[in-house]
Length: 79
Image (cartoon, rainbow, N blue to C red; front, side, top):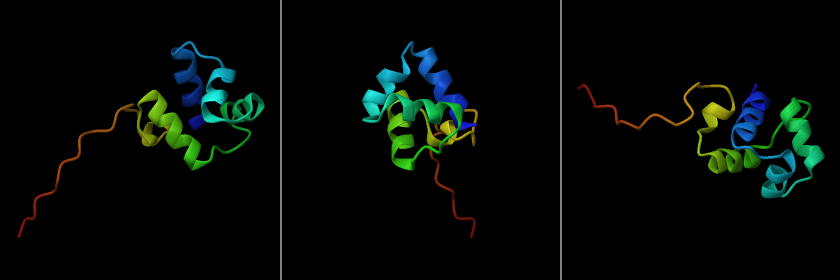
């Protein structure tokens, strides 16, 4: 459901598909297909979207409902 998230993020930021497509360097029609789920978004563009919206890739891809990644904590060795 990544297409739903990228649409919601775009709309929440009051941006058009054309504005996001220009930022990504792609045609608006291609971006529209990503939002509607008709075409898979390449990883490189997902990374750029995550950076642009300042959210995690896990959030964009639906693996997490937390927009921001949780802080990394090192696991302690229990020997």
